Image 1: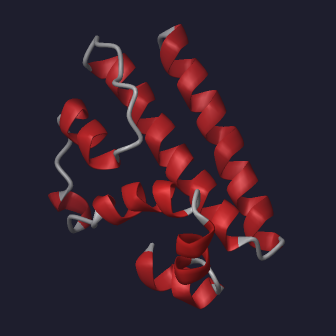
Image 2 (image 1 turned 90 degrees about the horizontal axis):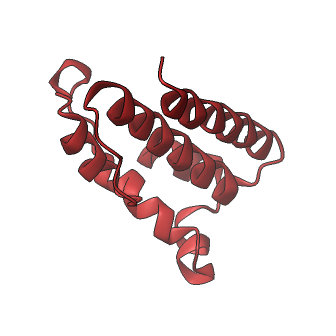
Length: 110
């Protein structure tokens, strides 16, 4: 494994652990943020490892999937655009209140 890949995956593991802590604390906005960040970093690690390119500085999961040349049909083509949108939603209080009030609301979307 390349050092760059390992670095991306180590930070992704931290983000995943942070997501779990936020879920336990019922801080859903933070949980969704860290989930998005973990997925983003896993994809960037994959790009670094398997495409021999530097991952783009973007938070859009769909762009990273395209750059990674991954086919999502095997996992029923999840709507990754909504996870990308979540990155922005957590940054604005009005959108956070609308999207992340309850655990049930989050499970429907993500």
